[in-house]
Image 1 (spheres, rainbow, N blue to C red):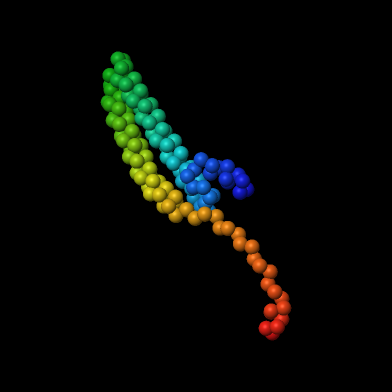
Image 2: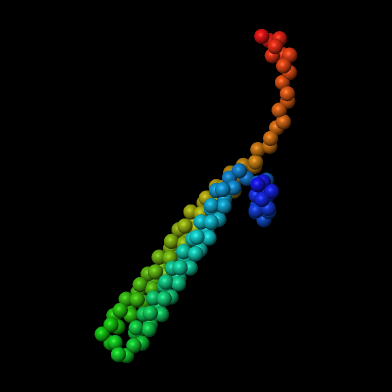
Length: 125
């Protein structure tokens, strides 16, 4: 298990494998999830943009032109909300990243215990 962890952290800046490995990996997963969420906001915004433009281009449906304008407005709101949420979470993750990498504790070194002399314990009694 230790060899696998060493291979995993080969490209990171901490050389001894830190004891807070789970927290660091959870932080990386959260960063990736944040990026996926931003991309889904952008994708939804583009769908609304295309739908709004499509509705505005229809000549036979002049009575629902308002729906096209609503779709364009919601498109801008979706994009703004997605970018704001992304930026807020990235700031929080940056703070956690600094905390985790500054307070990195190297793995404790196992000390060999010296065998106790049983004669000393017997004489003490």
